[in-house]
Image 1 (cartoon, rainbow, N blue to C red):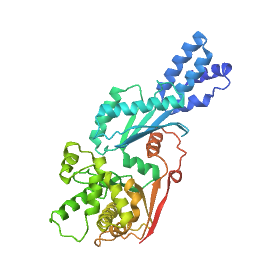
Image 2: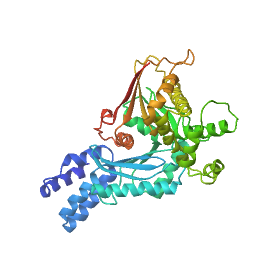
Image 3: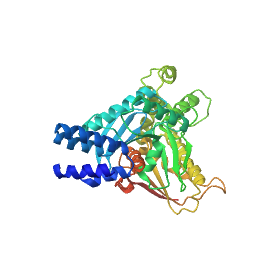
Length: 400
């Protein structure tokens, strides 16, 4: 530290814009690697008289930069920030679900986004991040996450000093809430996650389309398809007219007969493609008030409400006067179809269930990558000036 201070004293004679407190702050934080690099650069550039280059090199060496990534199944967003919490760059790329994509592909997408962000920010390509926080879809298993981080660190050791990985739902929680909170996702898939007052991460659902995703766009779509087939074949007795839904089904998936559904479900399966039928179902209900569609959406709403009930029970928030929940996903665009069932799903099933009297639903106004940045800033001991109130807005306020 004495050597650094002596160099600062010498440098101030050459560069009046250089601030001694900058280096002192980084030394205090324990970034000795920065100090060593600082000394090497000092000797190198003073020796050769490259004063301007020295000044620029010092700026890049001493500054702390970190990035937060929100990796979803369809797209990935990266936000680059500096130690003051200023957003330097915002980039988007391909999807990076760690269960649907290979690790190599995920690495490439993330690294390409980092390089793009550095370029936008006007920083050298070899700038090393202090920390990279990855909020990835599918990152629920701690053992798998640790393996992912280890492989990334080996493959790209010059990218960042440290890597941390969390689930994308956790990142959303960090974006919308300061402490405890709940997020209920209903998009292509569904899940409910929460952070309780002790900092524990709790979950309900989110087990994928084979055994979970209840109340999601995929669930609504497949429920409608099953209903059409079952009613048409006499397996299920119903007064509902399925002709309109069947016509939309064949048109949406470009089928000439229902038997061609096998190709969609098996040969060329795409969860997102099947889930896309949900939007057409919502439109059908808006156009003619299709009773079968209304019934399916009401059931989806009830299931989503039950997710919250289960999470609140685990969080022991029985006496909380007002429940705050972040909602995410395209299905919430059809809340008018979900609402009746949703309220039913929040009702007590038995005496052990909490009594929910008031609930405020929020939606994000920023990318969940902000939550990953918040985590990165905390790990790097940096300030984070963006408040949760800047990141969310009220979607709906309900009284039971």
